[in-house]
Length: 231
Image 1: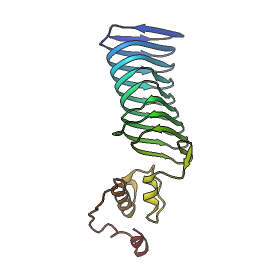
Image 2 (image 1 turned 135 degrees about the vertical axis):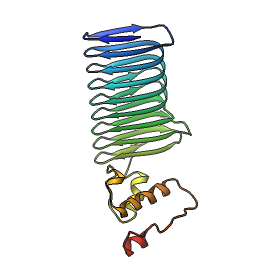
Image 3 (image 1 turned 90 degrees about the vertical axis):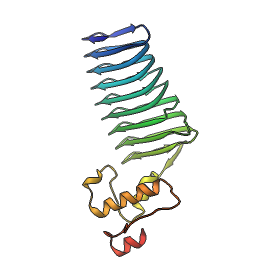
Image 4 (image 1 turned 180 degrees about the horizontal axis):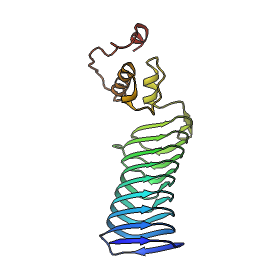
């Protein structure tokens, strides 16, 4: 089923359970209620709200926010200025936005990858022990109020990272890199780094796994004597 919304202040749509839906909206807010097999939405302007459940949700947005007040197995979102707000239960989330915020309350996803340039990241709820998260913002803040444990990587270049009301100086991954005696911008792609820096990234990746034994073949061959001894 395809739905095209040209304009309008508010549209409420209730569909039979189990249908796949494709929505395109140019202006105006859209609220969807029901259960969907797959939901695909392209939003030019206006906010989108899903109140129900879906197997897979995929959102492309230029300027609207997406709110999920329900359940979904997977959620993928790409946006320029739109944010993501969750008050339901999603197993896996992959989202990228330029200036939008991320807000999650309640049951937290098992797998979460969220990247924004200037947006804030605010998460409050109970985490699953098997969870793995990667959170990145360039100038926004990361505020986490999490009950339970999970594998977490959170990074902000100029903002603050707060966990349970306590501000952290830096993430574990960043600390491992800087501990090698070299300042490294973690937003730089690995293939853009020099050979010595790439070696330090590989060492940091190995250390981040907290393995009891590391087997390395000349890991400091491209480092000078002083930094090699530091490693």
